[in-house]
Length: 189
Image (cartoon, rainbow, N blue to C red; front, side, top):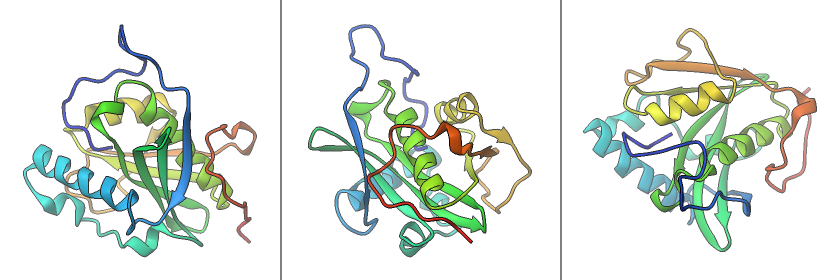
């Protein structure tokens, strides 16, 4: 999750309201607002890591974030796109969460946690039984979120030179969240 070292918390800070009216929609990663979210995330990660190559290794193609094996999920608060993240196939039953981003005005209100849940639900809907992700040493808030959401350390599964954490979570089909994007389900054979 792109963030750097900006202030953050899992709940709403005093004086702010916790997000309660988010909806998640599968979008095209090359069309607004998904493409806008991805561009903003790229700029933020460049500021954090002082290099655009952070997003080029390991490479990610837009078609990997589309059906039948992937998705890009956009989170809306009212009519405003406030967050986005992608899924791509790693193996027959494993997806990878990629490019999670929450716009700064929507941070510290539970949006990232809701987005993570929506991505996990989308992975279930696509037939995956586990999800993996990685994050870098300057993304402390993302690391804390992933660990608190049940991601456990796994050996590095990619060659991301910026990652310090590789995590995996088994998806329990009985614990599907309510944040799933409106999308037909399909089973992997």
